[in-house]
Length: 313
Image (cartoon, rainbow, N blue to C red; front, side):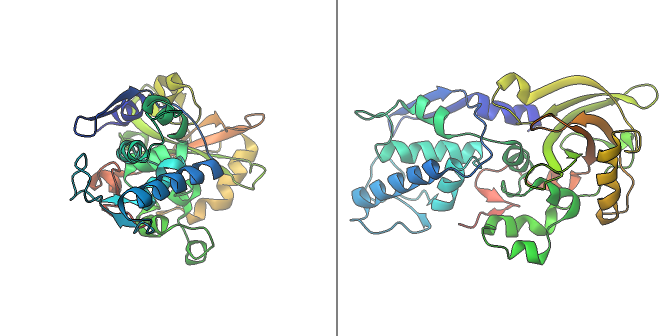
């Protein structure tokens, strides 16, 4: 599946379950990059309703099936962790589809006084650049942008709030930078490095390469998929002309950030980059740097797996 085709999985979000009596088609374009207390409340509402309806009020196991419900295959397994990802802007299209089925069973949509399933999905199932790129790549959707360039230390992985799926992906997420424009290929990751934001974060954005066509000199035509906004048309960039360099020809402050970290890159410090802008107030100048994501080619884009393995809860 190409990055553009993966975008379509969200933009043409479809759930057709004749057995359940659910048929939905809507467009998911929402953006959220913060923890959602309301999203957690939805997870509690769904799991509590399912517990009352099917398990005599007992707390759901982290992985569960739904026996005694003729509209659901009793051999199908659902995951509370997957449900949480869906309501915290970390869900894959697969996880969104099954979260909607569970919400329907729990009476959170298509019920008296509740929204339609389409409106419910459009409200709750949002995304950001981090989750989109990781879900496409097949790794944890909570992997921070810097980790693809610098890796995750043992200390970072032991920090409070780091989820089990991040730890599962950690050994494979650090990527080498591309050192030649001729090697850029579909699926490579494009990381944005700028001055630190108010949180102290210098790695500000991530996108996925759809296509790169070299032109004369150091120029090329670049197409990427990214999820930095809630406007569908902005989730794909097609045939943008860029001028490539090694980072030294860009903004002085952005280049200083690069100099400070490039020794931590896999394989050394050479990079292929172009000038851009970082998200956030003022959109400061930035370097957009290509990283070799070919190691992810053996992974499928995320359904419920993380790094090719069942996602921990």
